[in-house]
Length: 55
Image (cartoon, rainbow, N blue to C red):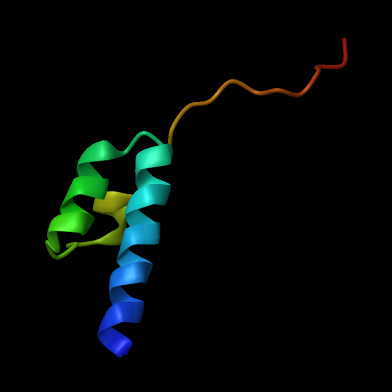
């Protein structure tokens, strides 16, 4: 049962990375490769701000 839960967690994590545009990371998670460090996986992305600026 624990193995099934772990596989589902990995699947959901891969989906999250794929949705964020981190396709290679998602593939690595699905292949079961070990992740070295968090900073190697999570890369900040520059996204345009949706807020209106006060002028």
